[in-house]
Length: 256
Image 1 (cartoon, rainbow, N blue to C red):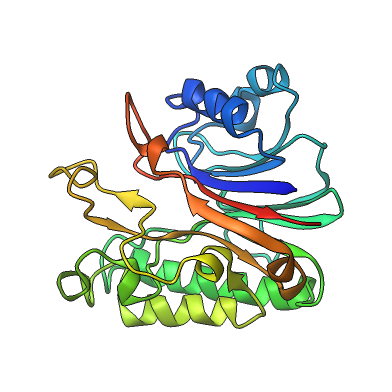
Image 2: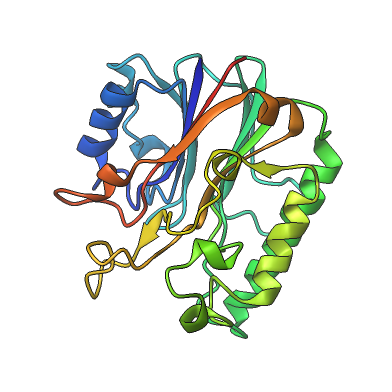
Protein backbone atom coordinates (compact mmCIF):
# COMPACT_ATOMS: atom_id res chain seq x y z
CA UNK A 1 0.00 0.00 0.00
CA UNK A 2 1.28 3.49 -0.94
CA UNK A 3 0.36 6.12 1.65
CA UNK A 4 0.37 9.87 0.91
CA UNK A 5 -0.50 12.79 3.16
CA UNK A 6 -1.04 16.50 2.51
CA UNK A 7 -0.58 18.88 5.43
CA UNK A 8 -0.41 22.62 5.92
CA UNK A 9 1.91 22.70 8.94
CA UNK A 10 1.70 26.49 9.44
CA UNK A 11 5.47 26.78 10.09
CA UNK A 12 7.64 23.69 9.87
CA UNK A 13 9.87 25.07 12.62
CA UNK A 14 6.97 25.51 15.05
CA UNK A 15 5.55 22.11 14.12
CA UNK A 16 8.77 20.10 13.77
CA UNK A 17 8.19 17.83 16.75
CA UNK A 18 4.69 17.12 15.53
CA UNK A 19 5.90 16.47 11.98
CA UNK A 20 8.54 14.00 13.16
CA UNK A 21 6.01 12.25 15.40
CA UNK A 22 3.57 12.10 12.48
CA UNK A 23 6.18 10.48 10.24
CA UNK A 24 6.95 7.88 12.90
CA UNK A 25 3.32 7.15 13.69
CA UNK A 26 1.84 7.11 10.18
CA UNK A 27 4.90 5.92 8.25
CA UNK A 28 3.73 7.58 5.01
CA UNK A 29 5.56 7.12 1.74
CA UNK A 30 5.04 10.76 0.76
CA UNK A 31 4.00 13.90 2.64
CA UNK A 32 3.09 17.05 0.72
CA UNK A 33 3.70 20.02 3.03
CA UNK A 34 2.50 23.61 2.78
CA UNK A 35 3.17 26.90 4.56
CA UNK A 36 6.69 26.01 5.65
CA UNK A 37 7.52 29.64 6.44
CA UNK A 38 11.24 29.03 5.94
CA UNK A 39 13.87 29.22 3.24
CA UNK A 40 15.30 26.02 1.81
CA UNK A 41 18.56 25.94 3.83
CA UNK A 42 16.55 26.15 7.06
CA UNK A 43 14.32 23.16 6.34
CA UNK A 44 14.85 20.32 8.88
CA UNK A 45 16.54 17.92 6.50
CA UNK A 46 18.53 16.24 9.27
CA UNK A 47 15.48 15.57 11.46
CA UNK A 48 13.48 13.88 8.72
CA UNK A 49 16.63 12.22 7.39
CA UNK A 50 17.06 10.43 10.71
CA UNK A 51 13.67 8.83 10.05
CA UNK A 52 14.59 7.73 6.54
CA UNK A 53 13.06 10.62 4.59
CA UNK A 54 14.39 13.14 2.09
CA UNK A 55 12.78 16.37 0.94
CA UNK A 56 12.41 18.49 -2.17
CA UNK A 57 11.77 22.03 -0.93
CA UNK A 58 10.65 25.33 -2.43
CA UNK A 59 11.06 27.78 0.42
CA UNK A 60 10.51 31.44 1.13
CA UNK A 61 11.43 33.54 4.15
CA UNK A 62 8.60 33.89 6.70
CA UNK A 63 5.82 33.10 4.20
CA UNK A 64 4.50 30.32 1.98
CA UNK A 65 6.82 27.41 1.24
CA UNK A 66 6.01 23.91 -0.03
CA UNK A 67 7.81 20.58 0.12
CA UNK A 68 7.63 16.96 -0.96
CA UNK A 69 8.90 14.67 1.80
CA UNK A 70 9.40 11.07 0.70
CA UNK A 71 11.04 7.80 1.61
CA UNK A 72 12.29 7.32 -1.92
CA UNK A 73 14.11 10.49 -3.04
CA UNK A 74 12.12 12.61 -5.47
CA UNK A 75 13.39 13.08 -9.01
CA UNK A 76 12.64 15.56 -11.81
CA UNK A 77 11.89 18.31 -9.29
CA UNK A 78 10.22 21.45 -10.65
CA UNK A 79 9.69 24.54 -8.49
CA UNK A 80 6.90 26.89 -9.55
CA UNK A 81 4.96 27.01 -12.79
CA UNK A 82 7.76 28.25 -15.01
CA UNK A 83 5.33 30.40 -16.99
CA UNK A 84 7.07 33.72 -16.51
CA UNK A 85 4.62 34.92 -13.86
CA UNK A 86 5.29 35.68 -10.22
CA UNK A 87 6.54 32.46 -8.65
CA UNK A 88 6.01 32.62 -4.94
CA UNK A 89 6.93 29.41 -3.13
CA UNK A 90 3.51 27.85 -3.60
CA UNK A 91 3.96 24.94 -6.01
CA UNK A 92 6.48 22.14 -6.33
CA UNK A 93 6.24 18.92 -8.32
CA UNK A 94 8.38 15.82 -8.62
CA UNK A 95 8.31 12.12 -9.43
CA UNK A 96 8.24 9.63 -6.56
CA UNK A 97 8.07 5.87 -7.15
CA UNK A 98 6.86 6.41 -10.68
CA UNK A 99 4.06 8.78 -9.70
CA UNK A 100 4.08 12.49 -10.45
CA UNK A 101 3.13 14.38 -7.27
CA UNK A 102 2.70 18.08 -6.55
CA UNK A 103 2.32 20.11 -3.38
CA UNK A 104 0.28 23.30 -3.75
CA UNK A 105 -0.49 26.17 -1.40
CA UNK A 106 -3.22 28.27 -2.98
CA UNK A 107 -3.36 31.94 -1.89
CA UNK A 108 -5.91 32.76 0.81
CA UNK A 109 -7.30 35.79 -1.02
CA UNK A 110 -7.87 37.92 2.09
CA UNK A 111 -11.39 39.13 1.26
CA UNK A 112 -13.79 38.89 -1.69
CA UNK A 113 -13.03 41.68 -4.14
CA UNK A 114 -9.62 42.51 -2.65
CA UNK A 115 -6.50 42.67 -4.81
CA UNK A 116 -5.29 39.43 -3.20
CA UNK A 117 -8.62 37.81 -4.09
CA UNK A 118 -8.11 38.52 -7.78
CA UNK A 119 -4.54 37.25 -7.45
CA UNK A 120 -5.94 34.03 -5.99
CA UNK A 121 -8.31 33.52 -8.91
CA UNK A 122 -5.52 34.17 -11.40
CA UNK A 123 -3.25 31.77 -9.51
CA UNK A 124 -5.85 29.03 -9.80
CA UNK A 125 -6.18 29.81 -13.52
CA UNK A 126 -2.39 29.53 -13.85
CA UNK A 127 -2.51 26.18 -12.10
CA UNK A 128 -5.12 24.96 -14.55
CA UNK A 129 -3.05 26.13 -17.51
CA UNK A 130 0.05 24.48 -16.03
CA UNK A 131 -1.74 21.16 -15.68
CA UNK A 132 -2.97 21.32 -19.25
CA UNK A 133 0.48 22.16 -20.58
CA UNK A 134 2.51 19.59 -18.64
CA UNK A 135 0.30 16.65 -17.72
CA UNK A 136 -2.14 14.14 -19.14
CA UNK A 137 -5.20 13.00 -17.23
CA UNK A 138 -4.39 9.37 -18.05
CA UNK A 139 -1.06 9.48 -16.21
CA UNK A 140 -0.59 8.79 -12.50
CA UNK A 141 -0.67 12.28 -11.03
CA UNK A 142 -1.52 13.40 -7.50
CA UNK A 143 -2.04 17.05 -6.54
CA UNK A 144 -2.28 17.73 -2.83
CA UNK A 145 -2.34 20.70 -0.57
CA UNK A 146 -4.18 23.59 1.00
CA UNK A 147 -6.54 24.94 -1.65
CA UNK A 148 -8.18 27.60 0.53
CA UNK A 149 -11.53 26.82 -1.12
CA UNK A 150 -14.40 24.76 0.27
CA UNK A 151 -16.00 23.11 -2.81
CA UNK A 152 -19.54 22.37 -1.61
CA UNK A 153 -22.03 23.14 1.14
CA UNK A 154 -21.23 19.84 2.84
CA UNK A 155 -17.62 21.04 3.24
CA UNK A 156 -18.63 23.99 5.47
CA UNK A 157 -19.96 23.89 9.04
CA UNK A 158 -22.46 26.71 8.35
CA UNK A 159 -22.91 27.20 4.59
CA UNK A 160 -25.33 30.10 4.88
CA UNK A 161 -23.02 32.06 7.15
CA UNK A 162 -20.07 31.47 4.82
CA UNK A 163 -21.85 31.87 1.49
CA UNK A 164 -20.22 34.57 -0.60
CA UNK A 165 -17.34 34.95 1.87
CA UNK A 166 -13.68 34.32 1.25
CA UNK A 167 -12.93 30.58 0.90
CA UNK A 168 -16.56 29.95 -0.13
CA UNK A 169 -17.44 32.45 -2.84
CA UNK A 170 -18.81 31.31 -6.19
CA UNK A 171 -15.82 32.50 -8.28
CA UNK A 172 -13.38 30.60 -6.04
CA UNK A 173 -15.44 27.44 -6.22
CA UNK A 174 -15.76 27.77 -9.99
CA UNK A 175 -11.99 28.20 -10.30
CA UNK A 176 -11.42 25.04 -8.26
CA UNK A 177 -13.91 23.13 -10.41
CA UNK A 178 -11.98 24.28 -13.47
CA UNK A 179 -8.76 22.91 -11.98
CA UNK A 180 -10.46 19.58 -11.30
CA UNK A 181 -11.87 19.68 -14.82
CA UNK A 182 -8.39 18.78 -16.01
CA UNK A 183 -9.21 15.26 -14.84
CA UNK A 184 -8.78 15.28 -11.07
CA UNK A 185 -11.08 13.79 -8.46
CA UNK A 186 -11.20 14.13 -4.69
CA UNK A 187 -9.81 11.01 -3.02
CA UNK A 188 -11.58 11.79 0.26
CA UNK A 189 -15.00 12.03 -1.37
CA UNK A 190 -14.52 8.65 -3.02
CA UNK A 191 -14.85 7.15 0.45
CA UNK A 192 -16.84 9.73 2.47
CA UNK A 193 -19.89 11.43 1.00
CA UNK A 194 -21.42 12.85 4.16
CA UNK A 195 -21.17 16.39 5.53
CA UNK A 196 -19.34 17.37 8.70
CA UNK A 197 -15.77 16.48 7.70
CA UNK A 198 -13.34 19.39 7.93
CA UNK A 199 -9.59 19.92 7.61
CA UNK A 200 -9.24 23.48 8.93
CA UNK A 201 -10.57 25.16 12.06
CA UNK A 202 -9.91 28.73 13.17
CA UNK A 203 -7.72 29.05 16.25
CA UNK A 204 -10.18 31.62 17.56
CA UNK A 205 -13.64 31.24 19.09
CA UNK A 206 -13.22 27.56 19.97
CA UNK A 207 -13.36 26.67 16.30
CA UNK A 208 -12.05 23.13 16.73
CA UNK A 209 -13.85 22.11 19.94
CA UNK A 210 -17.13 23.30 18.39
CA UNK A 211 -16.21 21.71 15.02
CA UNK A 212 -16.72 24.99 13.16
CA UNK A 213 -14.52 24.05 10.29
CA UNK A 214 -14.06 23.95 6.53
CA UNK A 215 -12.72 21.21 4.29
CA UNK A 216 -10.14 23.03 2.20
CA UNK A 217 -7.24 20.53 2.05
CA UNK A 218 -7.32 17.82 -0.60
CA UNK A 219 -5.53 15.01 -2.34
CA UNK A 220 -6.73 15.18 -5.94
CA UNK A 221 -5.92 12.32 -8.29
CA UNK A 222 -6.19 11.41 -11.94
CA UNK A 223 -8.31 8.35 -12.91
CA UNK A 224 -5.46 5.78 -12.76
CA UNK A 225 -4.79 6.75 -9.14
CA UNK A 226 -8.45 7.17 -8.23
CA UNK A 227 -9.05 3.57 -9.30
CA UNK A 228 -6.20 2.51 -7.02
CA UNK A 229 -7.32 4.64 -4.05
CA UNK A 230 -8.10 2.19 -1.26
CA UNK A 231 -8.89 4.63 1.57
CA UNK A 232 -8.83 8.30 2.57
CA UNK A 233 -9.26 10.16 5.84
CA UNK A 234 -8.58 13.37 7.74
CA UNK A 235 -6.34 13.00 10.78
CA UNK A 236 -8.35 15.08 13.26
CA UNK A 237 -6.14 13.95 16.14
CA UNK A 238 -3.28 15.97 14.70
CA UNK A 239 -5.34 19.13 15.31
CA UNK A 240 -5.46 18.32 19.04
CA UNK A 241 -2.84 18.71 21.76
CA UNK A 242 0.00 21.19 22.14
CA UNK A 243 0.78 23.75 19.44
CA UNK A 244 -1.17 22.19 16.56
CA UNK A 245 -1.41 23.61 13.10
CA UNK A 246 -4.84 24.99 12.30
CA UNK A 247 -4.99 22.35 9.54
CA UNK A 248 -5.23 18.58 9.90
CA UNK A 249 -3.41 16.22 7.52
CA UNK A 250 -5.38 14.54 4.75
CA UNK A 251 -4.25 10.96 4.11
CA UNK A 252 -4.94 8.55 1.26
CA UNK A 253 -3.71 5.04 0.49
CA UNK A 254 -3.32 3.48 -2.92
CA UNK A 255 -2.86 -0.07 -4.18
CA UNK A 256 -0.19 0.57 -6.78
